[in-house]
Image 1 (cartoon, rainbow, N blue to C red):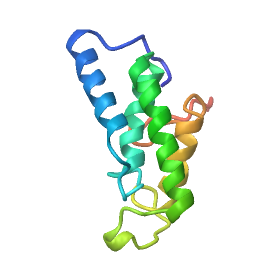
Image 2 (cartoon, one colour; image 1 turned 45 degrees about the horizontal axis):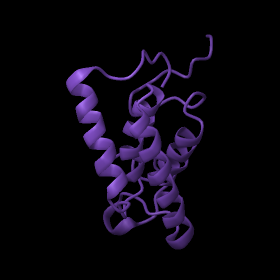
Image 3 (cartoon, rainbow, N blue to C red; image 1 turned 90 degrees about the vertical axis):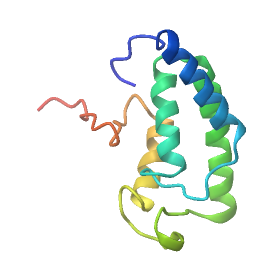
Amino acid sequence: ARGAAGPPPGAATQAADSFSAAVAARPPSADQSLCHGELGTLEALVVLAGQGHEPSVSALRRATSRLVGAIEGHGLQCGTPHGVASPGLLTGTGGIGFGLLRVGFAEQVPSVLLLEPSGRPQ
């Protein structure tokens, strides 16, 4: 993430290690949404990886690969009741697309979950 100041210290590193290992070991969520689905989880890995946390870099690669495989196999799965397609940002296809852009281009695409500014001069 922008403005990162290195890996998290002490206990935060242990928590980040545990989180990264848990995400890497589990199957992807059926809900791919940015709000409370797979891409919301991947956002945390994007931030940790951007801070230089190596286990998160590896976990992000694995989780992203699984997510892309799930999308290729089953299509986009929104975070709406019964996965009904929705164009929305947090639970719909808009957020899934934005989340995928964020995973692939974290330095250029701001985090909407963290309310990051775009970085463009006003």
